[in-house]
Length: 581
Image (cartoon, rainbow, N blue to C red; front, side, top):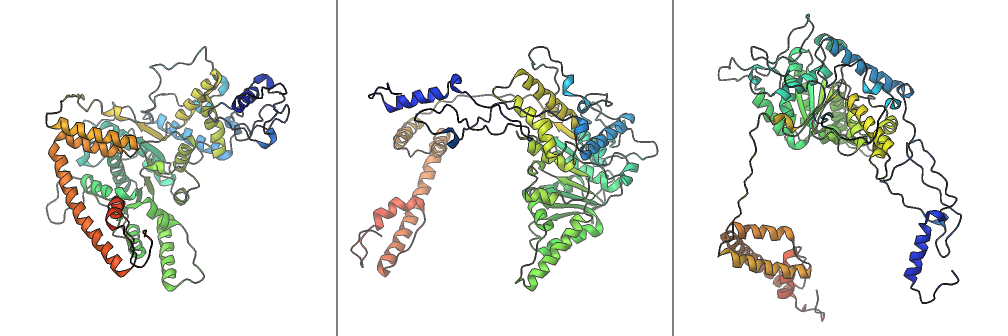
């Protein structure tokens, strides 16, 4: 460093220092990363050897890691190393699938359920050469029980059987007659899928707590119709009386209308239609009309007394079941409100509903959120999540959602991190090795196979046979002689605004659309804006004059009027020599 050129720019010297710091031959004494319990490396310890002259000591600076680089992860746990709750949950699922297989109505992509992917070991992987994608790989967007639509058909009489291949000592369960000919094959499969998970059989339904599932159908495939049909089956044939449907608040009225469309009530005045199976259980909606705790409690009491379906919003449910404490200076109304809340909690949670449906279930993505804590208080194990986007680039959020319907099937959070998150994330890193990518594909396959029985995924491909071919035609239309000068003048003005940095592309496109469609649209908009501007301008000047006469200051909050207000009203106050407000 003593031979440095004094005329050499400091930036060049700094560049030399940085290049020395990044020289692999200069990185002496750096220790290997230490494996941590979470499956990723601990933060690298600072290297105190070979300090670079003129630089900040290593023990005082923190090296920023690249999150997209691979890490040395811990060894993946074997099944026998998992916690007892996890092993029990997986054993129950395997026993359930085995019972379905023996009845010969399991419809998985693999018929052999005696050995699942979860039973395999990572040591069984034998890959020769690069792992490549092939056309024979499974379609993960269409997977799960009852996804073979060739079997999801009505019988010879047009009836739709729900409990296919049921035991001989059980009655056949059919959908409502008015749904025949209107419900599609993939929807029949979805109803059968929910039945196999939550009910399995009428006899077992009376003695078992049941299981939950995820109906992951793409948007527009009719999840609402499937749930309405399934709730009718539950309330008619199983002996259960209470169904609770938790939905986003802006969809409550839609759910109510769908119930009236597909399962109408028996008409009070007109004669009944013999071809329609009328709904025998009422539907209660906790909507905007129930804006007080007394009204909500009265509605929930009615649901508990008669049975039926209760539709409630997520936030309303969270508020009703979240315990609250009285303050020291609480009043009589506060005490009454608390008593009403406690009574609502009793009806909703203890014992609560026999079946719980969660629409837009991907909202359940953080186990520490207040909503997730409120939903975890539900006692029934018969839980169904509806979602069009089950996996949104975050495996932990996926685990939270699945763990709500199938507790511990994917293990605890730490076990899931070890078995799936760490190897899958590592295989997606920028500098992943071939072994990392092979392990990523295998662990993804294990996860997919583990959830085949309780997650049914269907994509828009199921509608390809029902929809006509889509044809798009693009017509290029030239501007007319009347439109060209308007367009040229407008683009000239916008180019000037662009140079000043004040152009708004969204507003410019809206104005151009008016010119492209018909110049009269632009003219009408300009005339209307001119009239409004004149009226508002007169109003502003009137208030400004009153303020000056009274010697008071009035504040006007309106961005479009700043320039005009300054030009017309900016004058000396009569009681001050200042020329500003």
